[in-house]
Amino acid sequence: MATSPMPETLFRHALDHDEFRLAYQPIVDLRTRRQIGVEALIRWPGADVGPDIFIPIAEQIGLIREITQRVCDLAARDCRAVPTAISQLSINLSAADIQAADTVDMLRALQDTTGGRLRLSVELTERSLLDPERCGPVIKALRAMDIQVVIDDFGTGYANLQALLMLELDGIKIDRSLSQRIGTSPAASLVIHHLCALARALGLSIVAEGVETETQAGLLYGQGIRRAQGWLFGHPQPIEHWAGMRRPAHSGRSTAPADPPFRIGGGADMPPGAFRRAAP
Ligand code: C2E
Ligand code: CA
Ligand code: CA
Image (tube, helix red, strand yellow):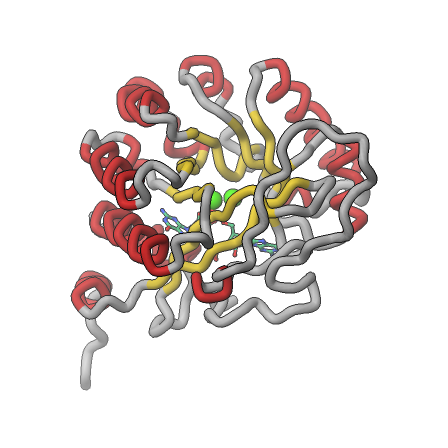
């Protein structure tokens, strides 16, 4: 009976054969609906599973550093191929990345490929920040390079207030499990209200993730949230999709009425794009 290949063999094959790709999902200004940045999300088109499944496996078997290096290389390649597509890019990092000094070099190389035109953010889960002393030096070095450091999936359970207080961070992303329940779950609405107050008190930016409906967008806006991401504004899409689609970010305060919605990549009724989603 044939045995299936070990995960390490599959990852190695995928790395050696350049199988990974990136999809980019817009982050928008909730009022103008204009794109203010994109988040890079890794895709493995030949695999039946999404990154929510294969990234934890790569972390467990010690290959996440190589995957993160590949993500930076792919982002650099995409930015060179379509130089006007992206001006602000968020990259997801794992716990091992934020404790490793050479992550700073990886991100500097990515910054350098665009001659400094690319503004970078890194997204870290609360879990990665459980040991603030070990991740503090890399966070400090990244911020010194003008790279923003944001806590991802905020409000999903680890609620690492110690990290918020001990580390110098730039923002939080409110997890979609909360964004999607605003207005339907009084508890979720209350938690969002208090997270926003906390973020504001600490001078942190806020992005709401996983926004799928106009109702959610309106209620989040009512909580003072000005930036959001989700299928309402656009699915993750390959770089080719972005060529020529970026508009300049809206700058300054304005009392003008909101622009008509600018839905990059379609609305919530569009299929999730060119890449396969994670198997249920
Ligand atoms: P994440 O960083 O929280 O990314 C957001 C996830 O929500 C993405 O799933 C995105 O496709 C999905 N999403 C975005 N908008 C909506 C929406 O409106 N509704 C719903 N239901 N989902 C939405 P994806 O791409 O499958 O990624 C899953 C997770 O895998 C990411 O969660 C992140 O933790 C991890 N991941 C993805 N790419 C990378 C990477 O390059 N490096 C690392 N370390 N982790 C990654
Ligand atoms: Ca993220
Ligand atoms: Ca997230």
